[in-house]
Image 1: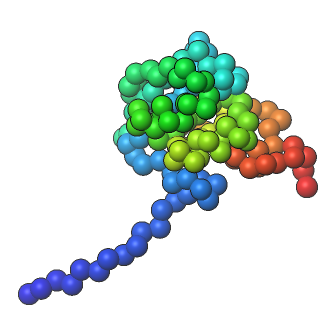
Image 2: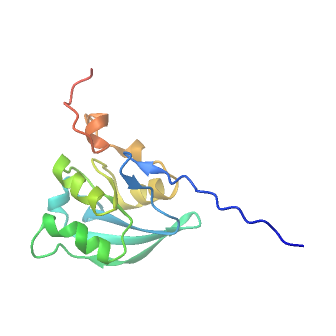
Length: 148
């Protein structure tokens, strides 16, 4: 008896209708300053990598800011296998660079490293959005900062 195989095109979830959501397991980068997220991406003292899978996160190493600074960071993280970046403040242009590189980005997030990792594992990162951030801007859009 032969089985008929149907090829079904699977819907791929997207973030901001541009970048695929990160696969599980995934490699997440936290842009840190000491034991918390840096308030701005460009002021991060360390770019810590964590492998997220099976309801937990495991430290996987650290990346350093490339010599060319922020413009070179999306490529460096992509080469390291990073699927997602969680960071503090970032400009719209910066967000666009990461989305173009295929890296999911969660900007304008604030918190201690352990708190942020727990939020990543349990899909609650948006709950750590820094106060006063326009929802469109935090999602990578070009918000005006005012309610419409």
